[in-house]
Image 1 (cartoon, rainbow, N blue to C red):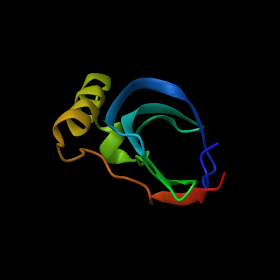
Image 2 (image 1 turned 90 degrees about the vertical axis):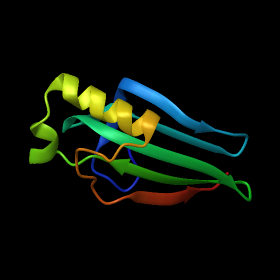
Image 3 (image 1 turned 45 degrees about the horizontal axis):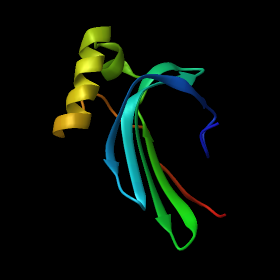
Image 4 (image 1 turned 90 degrees about the horizontal axis):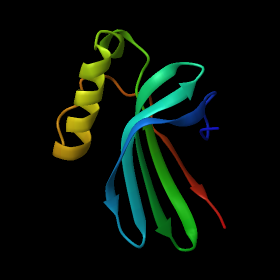
Length: 101
């Protein structure tokens, strides 16, 4: 389950680790979000004072995303992850929080 959302992540069709350090991880991809389907995800995790701080963006299942073909979705998410291109879709509200040890 994704924290604070009525959805679950059930794997990825594409996943790119954008940043990885001893205290931080950022991954961007296209995930299977149940019950919506395949949507873009941008997840950031950072170790802070013994806890994990997270910020997760999930793409909106809306007209902008639906208008893209499967290949254009993959290319748009790839360019967003690797080259910092502007997203061709909308994001839902960020999900943020802290996981204590």
